[in-house]
Image (cartoon, rainbow, N blue to C red; front, side):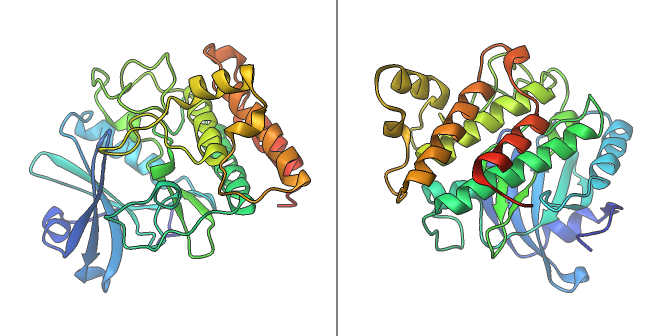
Length: 295
């Protein structure tokens, strides 16, 4: 079911009446864990969008397009639903939680977060880069729009699965949805300001988060975060770059060399000027070379 390129329509009450719990609240709505009885107990993460979405015909058209995005590192959109003037998007549930859960903890997640090694973190960065490169290859108007560590889930073997791609295009253009979390590019003022270059900025923040182990500004509810691009620039200007790196990571000369090069990529991605940011294709290639990945 998760590998199908056809998005199913499911009854709204089927989802709302199923056993579930709140998994998190984000820019575009609340995500629930739901168990679907008519799907033989299939477990989904159901994203209930805010009520300021685009017109129904446009919504369905864009959701169908999202459902055709097939990549090994994208979390498939399996179904959607409508009722009570609200829209639901259903993704396959990932019981190992998100990158955010493992880096920063989450009392609501049903997982036992373990420290992520540099090998795991660097591979997450590479696989996410490939997934976003794939999205960008679908056309100049297609992008993720809400890339952050809480939207990157991990399989049981810690393979990255990117979720919530394209949701920004489902929200009304006048919606003020940004500058409330520290992963958005400075040029983003509303939900329709998303672009491939804003994705690159958000990916850069993710790189800095993986390297430092620190949460971006406003990324965690009721917890303080850091303006990572600003903080990193202030550190590398005055001190050796290794001060930036997560002290939980055991380091060798090879690992430190890789981290220094990845840090530079993170800085490039978060340039204020969109035109100075590299493409995701270039980033995926550079990460593959830096970390010596074969696939």
